[in-house]
Length: 348
Image (cartoon, rainbow, N blue to C red; front, top):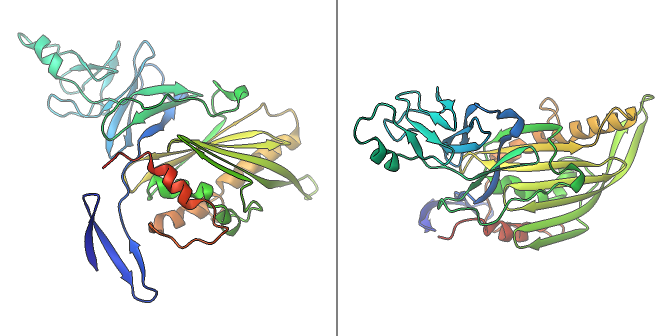
């Protein structure tokens, strides 16, 4: 076992004497971009909650005017947690310890008992904040390790007919794995067959263009009718991604379903993966209703039979990152994905 420096970090290198394959257990950094924070419907005026993202805790609140704030959790006064007993007062959140108030930009707006230096101290008393936007029923936050302002605007990835609507269903999974390792699955087409039994093994098209990437493939989805007969329908699938935090899988043929896949780093070794579904009105056709229900159940799966996402989680949580993997000609554009994803890491 030996150590070497990589990007200023000490990295352990383990040599497998059996095949001389070197495994680098290197910690990947946090990427920058727009990331899911919460569903808009869950954060009403006066709501205060704590969220864990990007190696620390943040406090999310909506003031009485409806403006959102996502600020650092601890008061600069004596360190009380603003999310643990803090309350919204007008356009600010008040600390539960001494009632200091902070607006949605993290600026101190009131020190109620200060006698002489209140106005001067307010200019110095501030907490860090993350830029936030609301889009398609979701609250998004911009994160950059260097605390820079957004490098690109956030835009909807949904088909036009669902833009501005609210999600129909959403599922979340906390996973002990770096965000890049999780999202790499999207271009690992053979795993769709090997792990999930899907027919789609190859993409029809792969594009990597600036902030965006896109792929298309064909698949089938099936359901059992009232007589227990299996009926299969072909699907055309378009997968698109903008930055590390925004991903869309758009399924269309007999039924159209948009599924956002959204990974948010909790830390460099733990992430939250969410699947957020949008689709049209149901109850118009029992067969369509059943198809949508079975489709979502198939994608999410069940822990009891290790299906859907539950088949991926133990693989993610126990894998290592191979910097130079051995790939065959049908493995999908793994290295292209890594090169594309690498642009979202801050420069050393």
